[in-house]
Picture 1: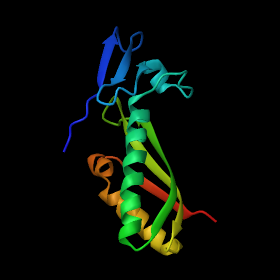
Picture 2: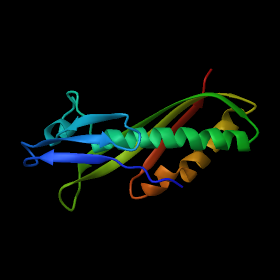
Picture 3: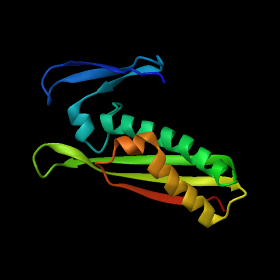
Amino acid sequence: MPTRTARTAWNGSLQEGSGQVELTSSRAGTYDVSFPKRAADDAGGATSPEELIAAAHSACYAMSLSNEIATAGGTPQALDVTADVTLGPDPDGGFRLTGITLKVVGEVEGLDEAGFRAAAETAKQGCPVSKALTGVEITLEASLEA
């Protein structure tokens, strides 16, 4: 299996410094990062490790769920997946990820709500990014499109 690479160039201290993270393998882009923007409610045009983890988790989960739906006998038509990753204080000092919420709304043929929710939960457990983030509580909200 392939290895993917990202690179960050950082200048300055934590509070006054800033950097750029480059998605090296895909060449998809280079994005600004700074701690003050990371810790603020408004990201101000900069990304953060939490946003990048959310992007990775939502993409990985969508792929995993698509597979689980097919395994359960359904056909995924569309999946809308959001991952919310929260940064908060660590009781031991500093910061840590305090929670991740996966939200998915699916348009699926061949599965009822219970079957979809079961596939969604199995996908949460089997997604490689979920496995990598086992130290963080991951909650799931799953529903079929009405």
